[in-house]
Amino acid sequence: EAGVTQFPSHSVIEKGQTVTLRCDPISGHDNLYWYRRVMGKEIKFLLHFVKESKQDESGMPNNRFLAERTGGTYSTLKVQPAELEDSGVYFCASSQDRGRVNTEAFFGQGTRLTVV
Amino acid sequence: KNEVEQSPQNLTAQEGEFITINCSYSVGISALHWLQQHPGGGIVSLFMLSSGKKKHGRLIATINIQEKHSSLHITASHPRDSAVYICAVRLHSGGGADGLTFGKGTHLIIQP
Image (tube, rainbow over all chains, first blue to last red; front, top):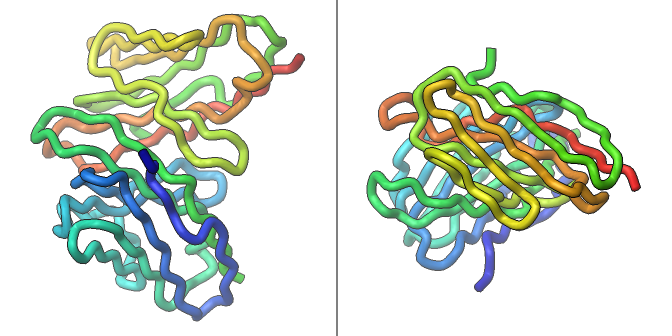
């Protein structure tokens, strides 16, 4: 079974450009999460999808970040326009939905974004 | 102050040593995860705990809900265990974001 896959693995862009990160969750996983680790800090939650709906986007840093999950399958995270402080590693995770029961989260390899 | 504190931040040990990494949290949680990240690699889930103890191979994870504390132990450590070990908690419903809240990680190096 394929795990969570993220694309690209690395991206270097100039300040002001646009970048789109993609996450393909494990098939059948309704929950999809985006996280980010900036240099020297702990990983931080960005947002949570349940199927195609945004369940919680309280961690999104500002309106330059837009996440979508059309059709409830893969998700994209667009940063437009990118700023230097957006550099970091962006992780995606997915899990099954079992109501209020905790389920294991499966993480992707991450996308390392460098804004220069 | 982070809601999830890990110690130590860095740990270097000799092959074969028994390793303990600690995690303390300050809020009510519904589950605690131990994760592993190799250099340049993705994150792998090792354990998900809500009570008691779990064992998988040479790895053991324990949690004490009353004391808000968890430990990850590695027996007979090996250089391939070198990685960053991250503790993450899921807050009780309504206690914060839906996602996990992470510690800063413990950077473990096992020398041959």
